[in-house]
Each structure stands twice: as structure tokens, then as C-alpha cells.
Amino acid sequence: MSGRIVARAFTATALAGVLAITAAGAANAASPPPRVGADDVVALPNGFQPEGITIAPGGTGYVGSLADGDVFVFDVRTGEELDRLEGPGTPSVGLKVDQRGRLFIAGGPAGDARVVDAETGVVLKSYQLSTGPAFINDVVLTRDGAWFTNSSAPVLYFVPVSPSGELADAAVPVPLTGDWEQVPGFNANGIAETPDHRALLVIQSATSTLYRVDPDTGAATAVDLGGATLPNGDGLLVVGNTLYVVQNQLNAVAVIRLDADGTSGTVVDRLTDPDFAVPTTIARFGSGLYLPNARFGTPATPTTPYDVVRIDR
Image (cartoon, rainbow, N blue to C red; front, side, top):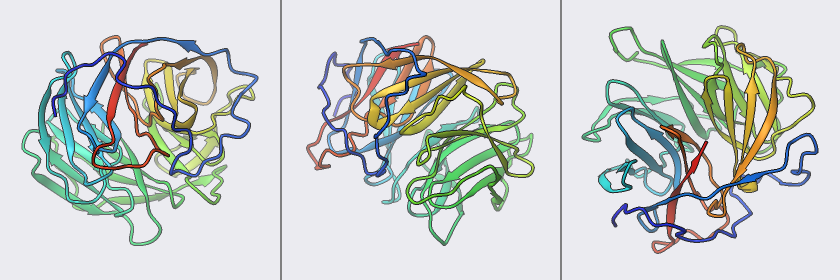
């Protein structure tokens, strides 16, 4: 199916998600009113079931499938489909592309992660991160490696990458401690770096809490947002001192102005779009923000339409 950009592809009504996160109390009095915008929609193959998205500096976008782990490759400027990398038959959840043309992909319930050649789809390295409760959900790339979240256990996983780009043979588990609260349901979800690149930011979906995590110790401290919470928090994106938090079932993106060290911040905006249909993750190219619609709560069939929404930031 062509990745041709189609304006106003469909209007979503799905509000219930497989994450089983309640939206009760979602209206946050401390947050400003939503700002609504409308831009373009990039069509994905029917039945694709997207979740994660990443965009290379040159403008090639990659979207992972929860259905079979395939990766849809498209031109961000035109929406044209460029390729489809074959998956392992298990989900591809969060993903990031590095400057060497490698995709780091979270494997969801398979408890694994893999590094894939972004051009050929060849698996370069696989990591079995957990043999216990696992939903390896998201990934962020830092200067010295890749960090993965597990929504089913209070632990992060670090895959070291040498300055020359060599991948470590094994991942290092880093238990979450300090203020971290593990509860029933989906816990650690989206992950990003603080603006000063010294720590990690992790959204705890089940408690609507954003944490700053020390990568050396795993100690987590709740970020001071002046009393604001982030219900249904999912994918994270940091641009300068601005943090974007996707709030999937709320069909919104919270915009937070952070201190450089990520210890505190202020919710300054909420972005929405009529085409949002439970967006999950977020990537940036130029002045655009790109979010795949997971449509959680809508029956996933081979003919169910899916897409990626572009809004201006």
C-alpha cells in the first residue's frame, strides 16, 4: 500500500487501550487548555498496528508493527513508502535509529531487543533482556549506548555501544530504585534523556508520574511539575529544553518546559489534532512532529486502516 500523504484520512473514536490505563481524572486543572492544529496524515498499510516511530536525520521515517514486527520505511517529506523490513513475527514496539544506520528495537512481550540494519533489515545483534514478566516498551540512544524500558518490571536495560560503534555482547540490567513506585498494570513506558544529557527521563504510565533516573544507580526521583500529572503518558521526545509527552488515550501531547537537569518543569501547552486516534510515540523532523495512531480499542483486522499524523510544533 502506498505511503502517499492523505489529508484527513479518518477521524478516530477509539478511547479504550490495551494498556489498561484508566483515563479517570485525566483533565488536569494545572494544565493549559489544549491547542488544536491540523496538518497531514501518512497512510500505513492496512492491518499494520503501529506503535513506535523514529526518523533519521536525512528524513527517512521508520514505524514498527505490533502485529509481526515489520518496519514500515517512508519518506517523511512526501509520505511515500520506501521499503518494508521483515520482522521476526513478534512485536516491534519502540525504536530508534542511530547515525550508523542501525535500528534499535524494543521487542515487547518477547522480552527482547534487537539491532537491525535500517537498509536491509538484517538483524545485527539480539538481546534477551528478560525471561520473567516483560513488555520491553521503548528505547533511547545516548552517547554511550541504548536504554530500554520494561513496562512489567522495575528495571531498565542498558546496551553499551563503544565510541567506534561496536555493540556489547550483553545488556546490563539496572533496577529502578529511589522514589520509583511499581504498581499493577503498565509501568515504565517512554524514555528520553534530560536536556543536559546527564540523566534519563522515564514516564510511569500507571501512576501518571514523570521520573528522572540516575543512569549509574537507577535511583529515580519524581520530576517536580508543580502539581501537574501526566495521565496515559506514553512516548517521550526532548528537543532542547522542551519535553513532549504523548498521552495516548487522551489524544494529546503535553508540552513541558524543563530545567536543564530535568529535576523540574512546567506544563506550558497541550497539543491535540482531530486525526489523533490513540497516538503512542513521537518523532521530530524539521518543524514537524510525527505520531503513529495505534488505535487501541479498535478491533485489529487485516483491513483496519492505520496512519501517522504530522503536526507543527
